[in-house]
Length: 237
Image 1 (tube, one colour):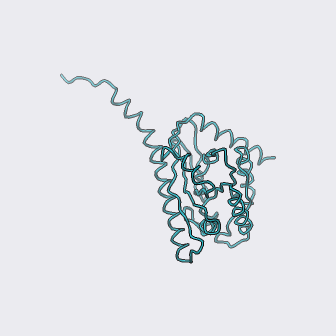
Image 2: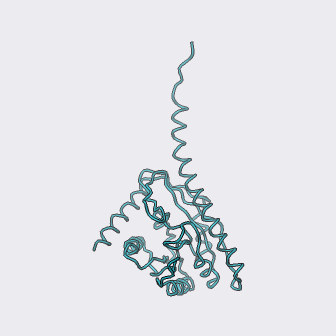
Image 3: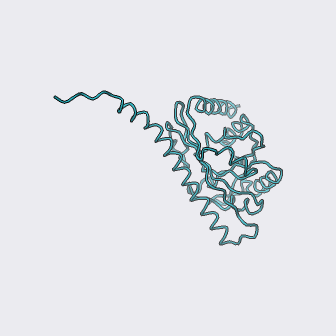
């Protein structure tokens, strides 16, 4: 019950941010490019995914990997509100606990084979944030589908004191959504090739995340500059 109430509040916030914010895409034809690559693996960082729940091309089924712990139950309910099904499971992390990662990997692989877009965070909970794990590149190798790094940022936001520095996007912002180039992993990729792909995912995610914040910040400063330039200057005597 509490999870559903929290999900209802979170869903309302996401829709309010979307409705009251100006959206900027980079590249400008971002949605069309995503459509062209479907089904694909949408990669994101933990703590930076709030506004990505509404990035849905609508004509494709979308599933997202969601952990099995209590907090993730809220996220599963939120995703359902946006027509996204949950694949329950996550990587083992540094504690090496069985958290359903093998099941989630298989389920994600099957989803891609059915033509479903799969969204997942590249970093593993309780590990160091913003460090891509092996799971996402393993899925790309098994499925033959591309990884597309995506990030969303707003000009107004709050950062929570969590391991991932969870960002809560706020209304009346500029919402910037940035996607990187597709990253393919060969089916015969060896350990070195997988590590190279993992590093590429990490680098690209950092790049698109930084760019999303840059775009949101630039849009926020632009009206302030315009207002200063429009202010009459006193003539010097």
